[in-house]
Image (cartoon, rainbow, N blue to C red; front, side):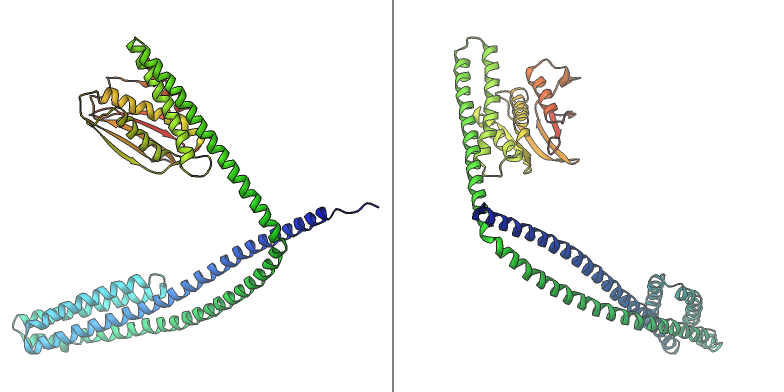
Length: 437
């Protein structure tokens, strides 16, 4: 009879516990998602209910403010008729402004209620009559005719309008009072539901949490061992990739040394210039690998902003150009390592051209390097304040190796190379996606 391997049994148990844990975690996440969604809906419902209570309170406040301002205007009118003191006219005008402002606020607040809007129409008419009578009385008294002013008051037209205003405002306030009671009761009911839902959700979370802890305890030791093995593997892989990048960088330095010796030994100026450009390109790629193994970032990450600033400064310093002012405005842009080398070579070519043609030896100038976002991708630009580009300059039709290389590398990046128009100097830009397809 075949015996069962204990290790296989243990592994099977751990696998079963792991599957149960995953199912439990999936259930917990689903419960959390649904629970938070339900709670969020309840809170929004409660917030809406309380906002309507506050809205009703503001309407009632507007009713009270309107009536108070009109009453103050009446009192100021009587005082002015009796005393002819112009201070009461100032008080009256202020009260009229407040009454009209309060009425307009009341009109805005009740636009959601057609019944209240119907009441505001006659109220507006009566207010116009009352304010008109007040103006007539003040005008008569200001003309030195107090008897005429009193006669206008005794006609009763203004008093009747004020009585109608009080009645209409009272109806509006009574309606809002009923609405406030209803809305407050609704808000209280929703609050009870929210509290009950929170308590039920907390109880459910406690139950699920306890069950999850029990399931996790069954497989904690095995998961810890697996995590430790993964950490060792990741550390080994990181060390290996760092070693590869370091060796590539050293190899490129050796190649650069050979190219440098060959350049110095060549008797031809054109050959030396071509070898120096090749040397710059080799060093640009070398700097990419140097950043990869020194940065301490995640594997495969390349910070284009950090690289652009460092390369710009190193190229200028390598030429000993103290008369060149470098301006940089770059963001931290983490790119795929596949984008690193083409971008490095393009940047090296643009800065080298700016130093050679825009800032020739003996001429002080300024070079600006920027890296930012552009329509979901990135935009790298290099500009100088030199003599600028020839008329009708077209990089795709140029015969120089540098421009042809930029065109080919731009296609590798799936980007666009742009020659920007400028009154001073040369301006180039490269727009490319955040990642390669």
